[in-house]
Image 1 (cartoon, rainbow, N blue to C red):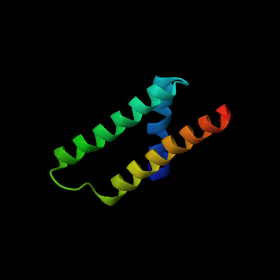
Image 2: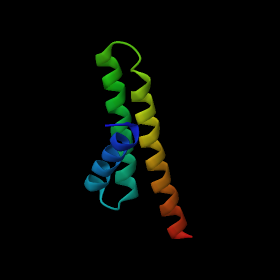
Image 3: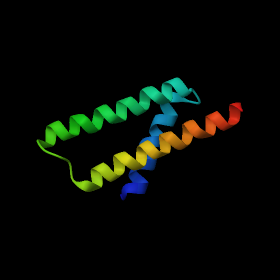
Image 4: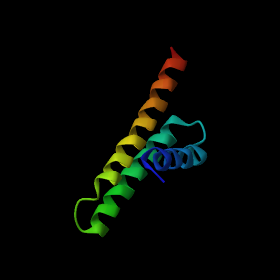
Length: 74
C-alpha cells in the first residue's frame, strides 16, 4: 500500500486501458491528474504528502514510458 505499489497500480491500470497507444496514455495521465485534483477538492485542503509522493511517482512512470517509446522510434 506504499507509494511505489500504489503508483504502479495506477500506471498498470492506465496501461491496461490504453494498450500501447501513446496518445491514449497521455489521456490516462491527464485523467490521473484530474483525479488527484478532485481528491484535493474533496479533502478540502492540500492532500497529505504521501498523496503528492504517489502522484509524483505515477508521473515518473508515465515519463519513463514516454522515454522508452522515444528510444524505440530512434
